Image 1: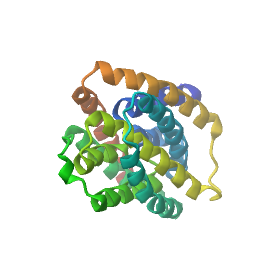
Image 2: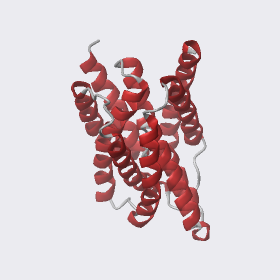
Image 3: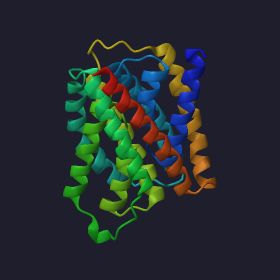
Image 4: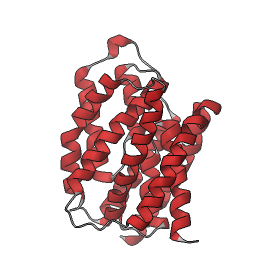
Length: 249
């Protein structure tokens, strides 16, 4: 199967995840780039940032049009993650491929567990600016280091820390993902890492188109079913990446 076809198929899956769940796409993008399209771990994380930034911005527009974005809450999360995303993005190029692979496997497993155990919206008195800033900083660091948007962490954090309903948490997480990914990508600019645009462009294009379908899919299939499907996929990805890292050690 050609690289173009693989890029289009992988992009469609990532777009569906981001559009339907507000997260999970970046966690799938990196292993797809590594194992299907031959990217190194460092190049894959940089390419994933491009794909996630474009796709998240598109999905954000769709959710904002429906009034499903809490702009002030999202801005707080995003602002708190800017500096960590910059620092982590700069540090990512100094880590070995094995370290990045193991770290990514751990994050993928965590993403799956969070999807299997979604948080419920809490009462307004649970809102804490300090907790929100701490969560936002952590999300920024994960995005900068591993090239993932962090939506799988942002959605439950927005639900449990700020008490947002799931629908608004999904939309708001896309704002956080877009900002964090753009900042992390900026931090990696000029590092000398070559981006294979002949693969990234069709990958991102397919993801953007699928993100619109993901938004419609979320309205037709229960959130629990979607989360279980993507959680199972993420667990398989985490296991394969960890096994690969151990075999290469």
